[in-house]
Amino acid sequence: MRIGIVGDSTTVRGFRLAGVKDAYEVEEAGRAAEVLRELLKDENIGLIIITEKIANKIREDIERLAGERLTPIIVEIPDKRGAIEKRVDPIKELVKRAVGVEIKLEG
Picture: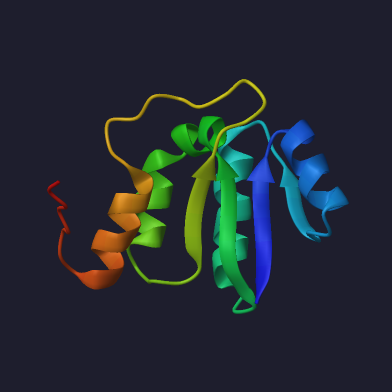
């Protein structure tokens, strides 16, 4: 399985240096959604990493497209400016989608 990355030039450059070949620099929402659709069509892509800033621009597309299947997994990461505060935990949502129930830990 391969990894795909969608993000700003600095983030994408770092992943290219790490050996990720499916790396796409995008700034515009339309182009980001187009790249996401192409990566989702590729059966060899198992993980799509997208920067939070880009993900926020195409949030509806991500939720709609990712909701149709379990793989590839879409993970959001901060860009060079740092994390964006979120209302929901994306990892918690991935687990909920994969397992089918919400898991709550008390402690």
